[in-house]
Structures are given as structure tokens and as C-alpha cells.
Length: 44
Image 1 (cartoon, rainbow, N blue to C red):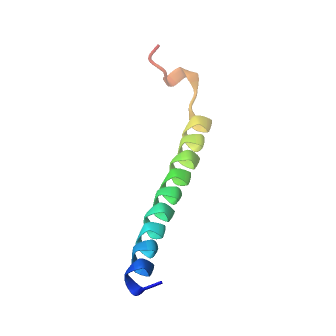
Image 2 (cartoon, one colour):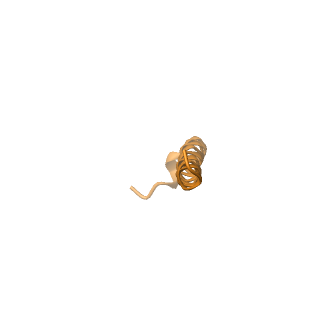
Image 3 (spheres, helix red, strand yellow):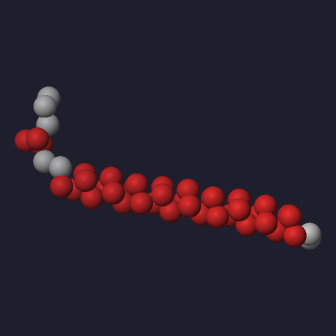
């Protein structure tokens, strides 16, 4: 492989890795928020 191809795959890998980390963070954050939620705070 030439240099440009390696750089393109590296950038794409970094982007996909960042998306995966953000997704995992948001899922963990939502689980923590749901555990702290009680029914008295709800408006309905």
C-alpha cells in the first residue's frame, strides 16, 4: 500500500473509533441518569 492509502485508512479508523467511544459514553450516561431518576420528578 502506498502512503496516501495508509493515511486515509488511519483517519477513517480514528473517526470510527471516536464515534464508538462517544456512543459507549452516551449509553453509560443514560444508564446512570435512569438509575437516579425517581417518579416524583416527572410532570405527568
